[in-house]
Image (cartoon, rainbow, N blue to C red; front, side, top):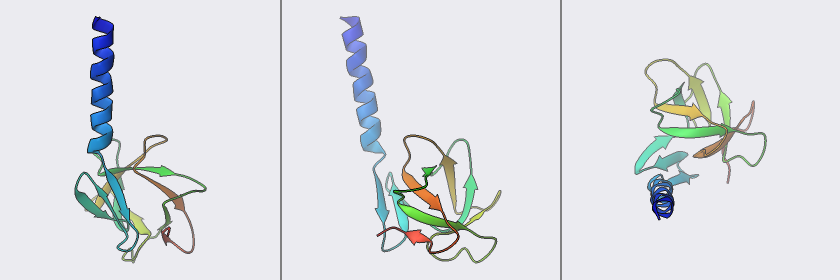
Amino acid sequence: MMKRFLQVILCLIFTTGAIASDVKIDRENCTITKDGKTYKLYGKVKIVDSFEDFKVKIVDSFEDADIKIVDAFEDSCGKVKIVEHFEDVKVKIVDNFEDIKVKIVEHFEGVKK
């Protein structure tokens, strides 16, 4: 009886967590919205281990966005400058349970249509 109760509770926790972290990618505005907060998919990015704004998985195919890492002029869709301070967004690089999949590119950056 107790084992069944714990299974039900765990199921509710994981289901609620999946619903609570609703992620939407706005391809037209080059943004990602998670839990009601919207972030640009360009600009200054800090890579963190915890307290991230959203989770990113780096892939070779089937990506949501193509990202070009730049040293300056990170002001258009898909251009990202990696920084340690004064970031626009904090991301955590993950292997599973990502919010968005990105491919690192040299040309033709942006959100996939």
